[in-house]
Image 1 (cartoon, rainbow, N blue to C red):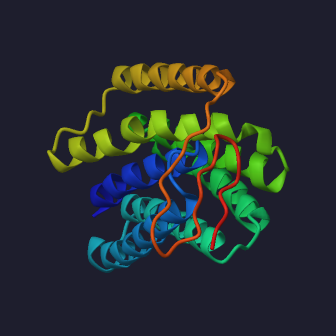
Image 2: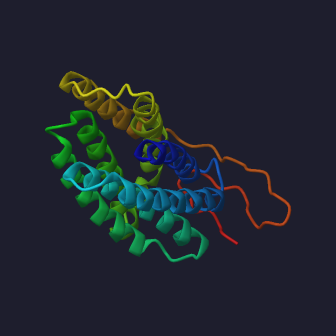
Length: 219
């Protein structure tokens, strides 16, 4: 179940990154986040009910619930126009929890520890943007989500589902270096002047095109 949640997260991270960059209406990504978050919470409850006792199942379940609640909150924040400040503080708290989870996994699963460090950084960026008022980071956050989504979620999910999850420290080290390079690339792409990205208006909606770094109107 945890790997299925991770697979769903890869899609949700990608769509939310594209929405932040203006390639998708934020409302579209919000609806998908709402669905993914609800499914992940349901899978988390099922996992807790069947996994048994022990530290490892509890740590795994904690991660599933943190992701599920985040996507659920993201979807509701956009659809209900909540203003994002509360979401930003929530992301800051989840980012701190992610650092604790990274520490907990470091001894037994160094690759997962690296992934949690990356996710914590993303949550921290959302805190900076939405709670601390640093909205100018949005293009960087969007590119970081797009670039890291498949590497930290989709690919690891398939490795786990196939029973090929690597636990060697050298793999974790290579993953950390590669993710650091992706964040550098995201910073470079965020500085490239963005052209206005036009999305076709759909019948029955009030969506219009948005440019990168701007807020999409929601109706």
